[in-house]
Image (cartoon, rainbow, N blue to C red; front, top):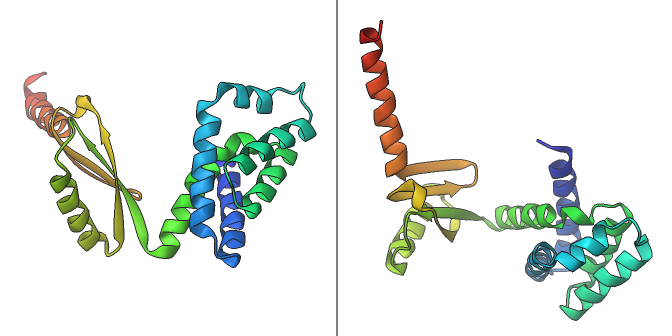
Length: 187
């Protein structure tokens, strides 16, 4: 576990507590997600924040202006100022991820990343969401992703648990079994 991820979780936890007190958890989560995406996709904003030629006040002014234009919650704007002061604004994406994880855990929800070789019908994802909800005992939110390298089947990541039903994984298992059986004949 890296020091930056530990710090991101600490900031996320503190922000969650503040958002919870003001009953704005969902708004802060959405605002934080939107800001993190903007930060990730806007090279000019990242350059401004990462460039030591710009002082903390210039960086704060730019970040706060962006957050206000996006209609961000005041508690988030205060946190952004603190992140700039402590030179942690670059961890905004990690903080956003950690905040979402905390918010989901507190509300009894969990995200499931579903990876398939090709897009599947929505009915499939709805059935999978229902099944995963029954297995985990929590409300599941499906995040869809495609990865042709899995060849076929499905890989589901729910929290720290991975359910790998991909053809690529099955082929890897078969290869390993064949190698183990062939080992005595290799000598």
